[in-house]
Length: 161
Image (cartoon, rainbow, N blue to C red; front, side, top):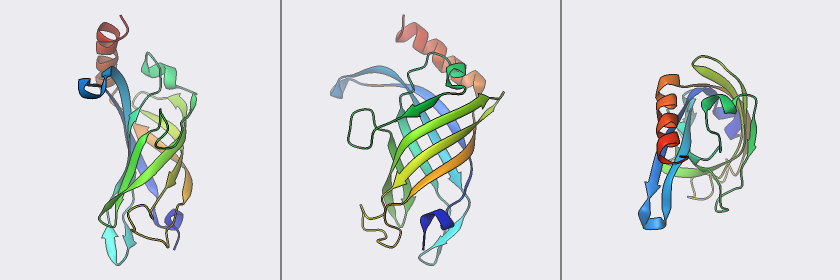
């Protein structure tokens, strides 16, 4: 059983937000989040409806348009700058290290994205059979241009003055 044969991305969502945590010294920072929807698949006799979550992504851009045609490389957890990623499968949040994200040209409300992700299904003991597979997925990501532009406007006034 191979994860790549089970899980097929069907699309996803790109969003961004400003987040701060004074308890750990994190000043207001612009972060992106990606949710990758997967088609339902059977795992251990159960029909799974799950997604891959990639949170707290720093693209270091000052507008949505700057993502167009760009490729970003990230370290793996726990190195500084890693993406907080996971997939809920087998009653556990399994780590997902996104190490590369590349964007095609931005459309009005979506962008074709290529993501390189390594999963670890052994971390919580979910499945030795699935192991630690890597995938290279092309996924169309939807986004709310007006909502993202509003967050960028706030970032320009609060963070990047």
